[in-house]
Image 1 (cartoon, helix red, strand yellow):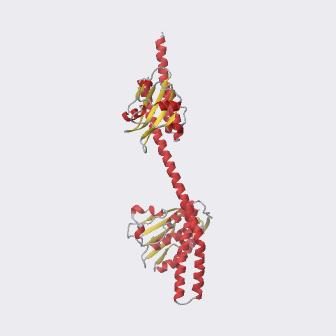
Image 2 (cartoon, one colour; image 1 turned 90 degrees about the vertical axis):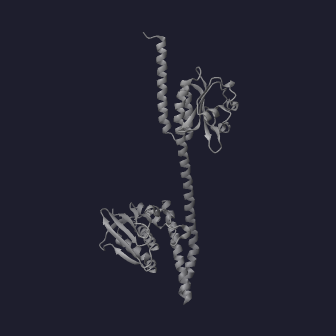
Image 3 (tube, rainbow, N blue to C red; image 1 turned 90 degrees about the horizontal axis):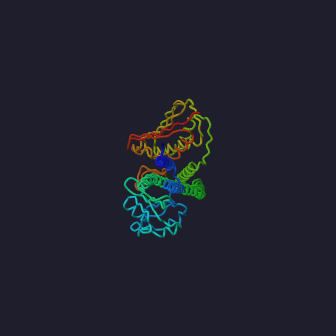
Length: 417
């Protein structure tokens, strides 16, 4: 025979079971919510439902200005609540935060720690209060409070349930904060990159006009003058050509990073690309008395690439090798078919690369040498551009070196189809 007492017990157990299911559902939701404002609202809403109370609030600790502040509360404006200073040493929330212990008060008015200004802001007379700390590992990040239980008083069971909710909420809030900080940092990086790219584009554009004038007058003087003046004009032209090369690199880097570089892929013998690249660097190599060794067959090996852009990439690889090669050393340019790809490599006998720096050489503006003791020129973007061009066409590029003084080999795989 079922008695009234048994019915009450069954209803009580059923209510607790539903509450536990609700907490499980909340945990799943908390772990999948990274929007901090939505998360705070969800926590306060769930807290009022779980404890059947009038309102709930979240107070978080401010590391920069050591104090507690209201981050969210049921039916209140978070921005207005955030303006309320909550002292750690003389408030109910401060006591919970400092002691890292739950606090149950079913007659708040008689407690001198009650902060009346809070009641005035939330427009609710606080009669009873349950507060629990929000811990993450060994430190407390805030306090979760519930006010005015609708049926009876807050008890130890409520505190236990509320503590479980607070612990999950603390972790979720911390994750949301980390995500928010990461997003802000990424946005800052994006803005800085945009500023940098705009500067490079503007500098490249603005310097071309005066540089064109310099090249024009230097060419005229070289043609019209004789003797020492001709040599001086030639030196001006050489310097101007180096500057124009730097401007071209800046412009190419900007186009790569803004996805404005248009690729027109066609099937062409890789030998043609390599010979064009060699023509571009022959004069520079000759000035250092470098011996160019060709390690590829004359029988055509077809690749499917943008010829002009790929020539630019190979020229950058060759210029990099020339820059770091000792005079009268050997420089090898090779190519061989490997399945559905063609392997192209540039090998030098230069200063080599430390093993732990092999990946960094492709980073923009990276230089192996310290800036204040550099012996080799360049902006440090030639390899970055080469990498961008080759990878944009479905290829791959990497560098190999046995260490300092052992030379290096840059290898690139180009698609054939």
